[in-house]
Length: 178
Ligand code: IMP
Ligand code: MG
Image (tube, rainbow, N blue to C red; front, top):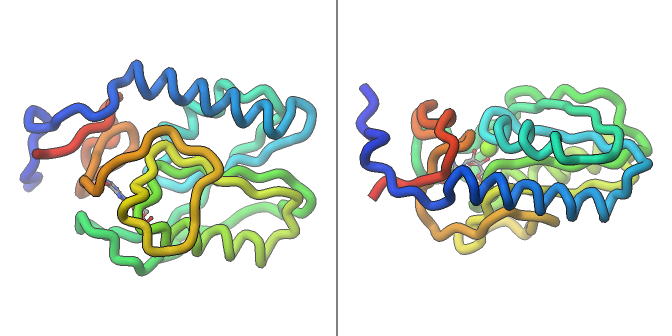
């Protein structure tokens, strides 16, 4: 049984704030990558699904979307540091610009693992990372995103794709349980 209730959530970033920041991030990405060259978005399931879908609508270049699945938390609220690759199937990305889209970078272990494996297995032209949330204070791996929406304290947050035991991904805002 789910032991947390949506009524007990404190809103950290509202739907409007997230929408505004997502548009700003897209503008930055548009101006960095330009509008001519293709960009492959690599969406990390399941957490970044909602952010990725909202972000991509504001991108101006020809965009392709790929989806990969990794797991680092299991059902606990503390990052295990152990990254499990559930499905890393991607087409050949040789010579392409790619942007990893993540919901949150916490210890950074997942992102370090992914950037290393992508660089090793694909001759990319350019690889950048965007994350909606950046839990800088929890960082263990040596990695920083190229773009991030908001910095967060070392709190467990849910909503807008982020889950607790598989729930709360559907909330249009990001919040935490007190
Ligand atoms: P990292 O490897 O520790 O950086 O963890 C990254 C992954 O853990 C993210 O992609 C999220 O799926 C998950 N995660 C980290 N912090 C939170 C949180 O506060 N709420 C929900 N999921 C989280
Ligand atoms: Mg994730």
